[in-house]
Each structure stands twice: as C-alpha cells, then as structure tokens.
Length: 151
Image (cartoon, rainbow, N blue to C red; front, side):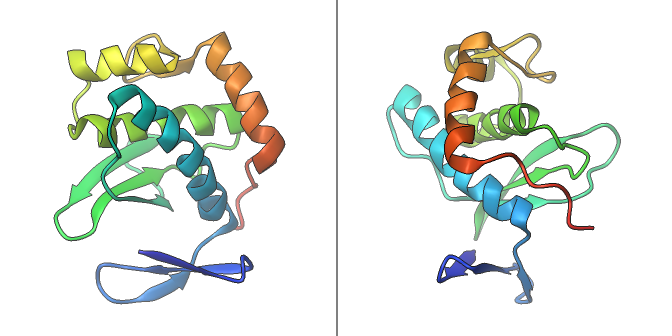
C-alpha cells in the first residue's frame, strides 16, 4: 500500500510491515499506471483489481513482472534497466493487461487485449503501435519524461 503526503513524498508499506520511501520512478510509474489503468478498464468493461508498483532488479532478461499476492493484490515490478519513457509505458501497459485478465500467461485472451490496446508483436516482446506511441506522447506532456535512476 502506498501513501503520499502533500504530493511531496510517498511511503511504501511492505507486506512485511516495513516502510520505505517511494522512489521518483515509482511515483511516476504510479501516475502513469493510473492513466493506463483507465485505458484497460475501458476495454475490459470493469475496474481493475488492486495493484501497486515497484522498481526492482528482475532475474534474467525480464524487464517487467506482475505477481498476485492474496492479501495485497497485484504487484507490478519494473526493471531499473528501463530508462526510455515509451518503453517503460509499454511495459507498464503490458503488466496492467495481466491485472485486467487476472492471468499471468500470454495466451489468446492476453494477446487479444494487447492488440486492442495497441501492443504489437509477440506478447512477451511488447512493441507499441504508432497509435499507442501517439497516446504516450500526450501522456508525457502531463507526466514529463521517466526519471533517471536515483542509484
């Protein structure tokens, strides 16, 4: 669960009960996710389940991951390797599709929704269509560019 105070800083309450400051990347991703969430909800015709975001090193070549936790909902992990705004937004949308279909797999249901939302190519290698890139351009006018790593 995330709590923001005066729009200045945000805290992340972890499942283990500890608290840490939310990074600028996570704040940006949460705002972007809230915009993209509406796009997914419009397509599926219902609200998404509860989700939160964290920037975290992932194993292998993974750049995004979505895991469901029984008591806290979906946790979306984004790799700190990602630095380009459009790619980050594409991965974020990809992970929100998993939340929307309530399934971690890249089967026909995932593929159909991904195509409707503007993701092209193989489901595990998401590429934004030109229409989606244009939407991202408009989003970035509000969000600004993805912040560089604070490490």
